[in-house]
Structure formats: C-alpha cells, structure tokens
Length: 512
Image (cartoon, rainbow, N blue to C red; front, side, top):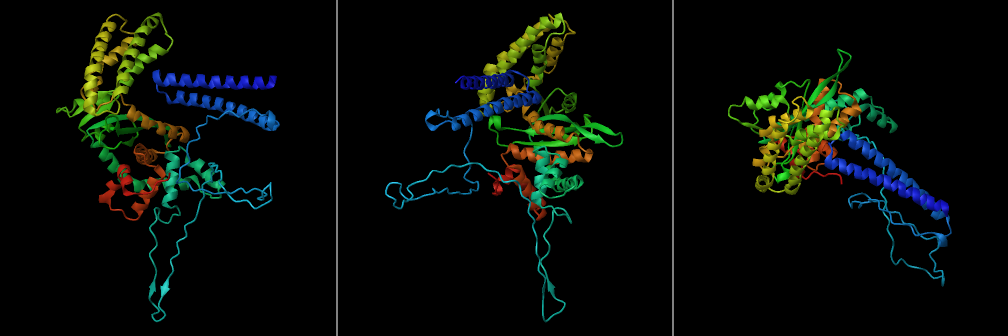
C-alpha cells in the first residue's frame, strides 16, 4: 500500500514538473524573445519529463495487470492525443477468431452478430525498388534490315540510375528534413544499397540544373509583388583555398498576404551570395516598386533613398525595436545607471506589447478594416509612445544602452509607423524570419555548404520546398511530379503551372 502511494506521489511530482515547464514555455513565447535555441531546449526538457511520466504509468499499469481481477483498480483514461487515422491509409485487416465457436450452453453452432474493430498505426520502412524498362526489338522475317524498337525513356540524369522519385527523396531529406548526404548514404547502406556521398552530391547538383528555371520564375514572380518582406541570414560555406569556412549569405524575399485576406498566394525565394555587401539586395530589387518590410540593415535605406520617385517605401520591424528594450528589461543591470534605466525599458516593452494586442484582434480581417482599427486604437498609442521616448531620452545618460535603444526607435520612426496607414503592412518581419528556421537546422546538421555553388543549390531547392509548405503542398510529391514533368518535356512557356500554388490546381495526387 505504501509503495502504491509513493508511486502515485512520484507520478504527480513528474506531472507538476511537466506543467511548470509548459507554463514557462508559454510565458516565454508570449512575452520573451523568439529564440529557436531556447524553444528547442524547453521542448527537449518537456519531452524528458513526459517520457518519465510514461515510464511510471507503464509500471503502474503492469502492476495492476499482475493483480487478481477482483483487486484491480479501474484504469484511468489516457489523455494522449491519438488523433484520427486517415481513411486514405492502406489497411491490413486481421481477424482474431475464438478458439471454440460452439455455444457454451447448448453446444450449438454460433453466428457472427457484430464485431469490435481496433485500429493501430503501423510503420513499414521505406523500400527501394528497381524499375526495369524492357524494350523488345522487332524484326521482319522477310526484310533482314528492318528492326523496330521503342525509344528509351528520358532520364533525369543521363546514364544515371536514379529516378525522379529517388532524386526528390534525396532533396527533401537534405533540405526539408535536414539530413546531410553522408547520413542518407548510411541509411541507404542499411537497406543494402551502396551509394557514395559524392554520388548523392552529383544527383543534387543535376537536380538543381532541372529546377533552376523554375526557381528563376519563382524569384521573378515574388519580386514583382508590390509588398515584400526582406531579410538575410549567414550560412557557413567551405573555403578550400584557406582550409576553413567562410560566411555566405542567404537573402530571402517573401510575400504573405494571408493576415489581411490578400489574393496572392504566399511564397518565399532565397538568393545566395558569398558576402553581405549592399550590391546584392540592390541588384535583387532593381525592378521592385512598393512597400519593403525590413530590419535596420543600412543597405535597404540606401536603396530606398536612391529612388527619386519614392517607389520603395521602407516599413521597419517593431520586433527589432522591441528587442533592444527587452534585452535591458530581461538582463541583469551591469551598472547603477542601467539598473535605474531598467524600469523605463520594461515600460517600453509593455507599450509595444499593447500594440501587438491590437494586432491580435485584427489578424485575418481585410486591409481597410485593419487600417481603420489601427487609426482609432494604435495611432494614439504610437504618438504617445514617441513623446514618452523623447522625454525619457532627455533625462538619461546619452551613453547608456537605453539611450541607444531609444535613438534606434526614433531614428526609424517613420518606417515603424507605415503600418498605421496601410492595412496590408505587418508590424514586423516575422513572416520572413520564420522561413529561416528550417535553413538554420539544415546548416546546423550539415555544418557548412561545400562551396558557393552548393549555396546556390541550397537556395534553389529551399525556395521551392518552403514555398510548397506555405501553400499546403507536400514537398516530396511536388518535387517528384515536377521533375517527371520537366524530364518528359513540359513546355518552358508553361512553367508557371509548376509553381506550387498552381501545381495544386493540376490535380496531381498528394500523400495523405
């Protein structure tokens, strides 16, 4: 009895630990910085406590099973999120018959009156198969020279043995599931298929040759929009000449009109460069006209200022503005001056949070309604916030970190206020920053891109995969199908049909 009470107590303690971690995560997600590293650490901690809880549950269930039936306590309902198994999944039906079908009362033959069906989700490891194309040769018995044979099917890789399906699997594993090629080669070896990493790398490069025209079309389509998010992120690239890695750059340009019910489908395109010089976004945005939502990178200011016609309007990111205040609010003060400034930083964070609360209320509404609400509710708060910042700036040390944060906000004020007059504009650049998370995981697992050409290949495949995901398209089915269409000779003047949002309309089947 004492042991059962102790086990039950331990189970409750584990559950309390799990709930505390969950509450901490929710608080951080709501009020804290959106750090992917911190989020991953919390999720791992929660997983560990959930595993401990499951082990304790399993031990108690086994103890109950070992008891006589009369002494067993009712099993409490499990709160696992089991979900529903899709009807489209293939099913293996197994019928379990009683050992004796005769009536225990009279011994007569019994008939089926109903049945209980219990469904369990099973897994069959991925299987390789060989496609063997047979092309018979036909000859005429009367004419010795006449021979007829069907032409060989086109291959995605000349002389290669990889089908479009295998190429799609390699691309998705590397750029969507973040599994480097050397790990994929090890997985294939377990299935009895010996493929060198260099062979897989060759396949990726040749696949990107097929996909590059589609990536070019996607980039042209995205940059033709009149409202874009722009950002960049560093990627490590091997620099063979110096025996170490250098820092390349993935520039991302995204559109996402879903928050205001816009008609254009969401999309993102990545463009690789070997450095972060301003000449790259200048070239990318050469023909762009409209609203560009960015962080405080100086090159975007230069690009906009050179447009005498004002064809580029910069909308700055409130998340970047908030981050400078939040760091002062969250961190331990390094001096008495910073300690005195901490309450001011805290109030700044709270004022910005009030603006985001209004955004939560209007997310998903049409642009004009969003603009009207912002004019009525957000503008007074923004105007008051500016007056408050200017007043505080005159009362603190100009060399303090808080003064630096205030000057950053005031220096970007016009761009921070663009969202007030246009319901299509978001308060931040989170829409494009979210698209970098998968690329960070790919970089972390792969350590680095092998060369600048590898960075270009990365940008091509990642653009198509992330745009497919934004449009609810399964990446493997998409890449496999468009590779098959390209190899079969899909007309280049109809490549727009292969963009993810148009591909869905072609009626191509997708896995459940």
